[in-house]
Image (cartoon, rainbow, N blue to C red; front, side, top):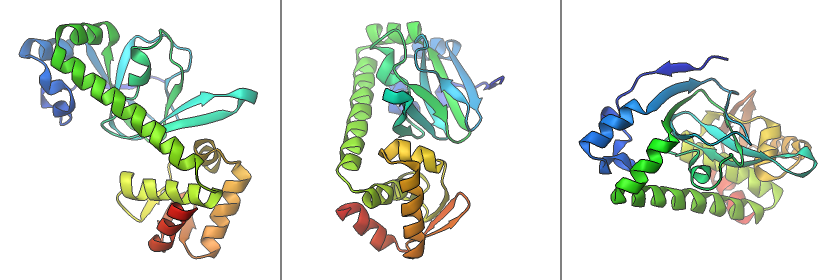
Length: 231
């Protein structure tokens, strides 16, 4: 499918202060000529595991999943990235090929920067290099922390944790449309699809949540938080 492309000026970007504010005026002008904006529909592949690394991707809007094929051809979701995330940062300075795939789970707006240009900025601008290293460390820390928390919970606690994540960190609402299928929830928290379906049914019977298709409404937030802490 042909990606929808758009023009944007990095100088006017609301996310400029996160890293790119350390660039000089000339570097900003070069940045504009070395980047492309694209919109990916839900379900579209942004990066395929094994592809050659030649761009740096920045998520401006939407949600994407980072996922990898493991043993027995089983998919594991490594992380859910949201706006402000540099979604390819874990690979661009490591190997020549991507170690994981990235797929849009909502319509997502991506800016891509040519890798050769990014590497030149890192070499020429020390302040920018430090900013990139800080973002890389933050990304690794968040993924490790999330995996540790999930792996140390029982099944009910894992699903409670994920629902709280979408409610509090992403949608800022007790009612939201879940962007993942039941199978994908299982891939994220290392559960079978059958167990996910079973526990969702239990949550509904216990009047913790209301499920209407893909829409989730948390009606007993205190108990969900307790499950997340103790589960």
